[in-house]
Length: 137
Image (cartoon, rainbow, N blue to C red):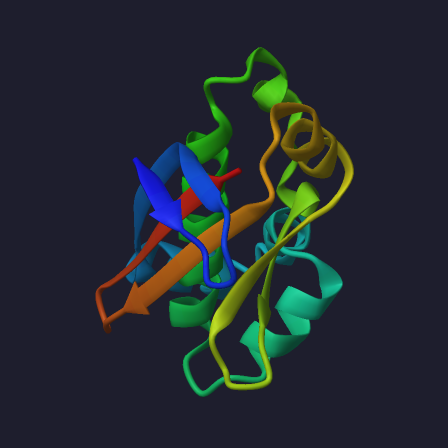
């Protein structure tokens, strides 16, 4: 698939990932005081944002789904297995839309494979959180 970019040029889709996480599973994790797990899965900025929300489990679940979807979008690269949870970070743009920031091994793989943009979409309900990530270059 090729997409035309405003201002000229083309981007091609290099990979797509999707993931779904049960919010109840995350609520149970929080209730068990499994904060070490949350610290492993989320960056400090992600934890601060999620724990500041009315229902933190929904936002944590969405970020876990996003990271799994991002990994899946890069999984054709053999080195992708070395990507850690901390190498993928969901941020919010000024308008509130999600953005995926790559660190460490994820950034290295993106550069080596020509990934120039990671499109991300998040959604959640009371029961589930979902994410789709498209790696483009």
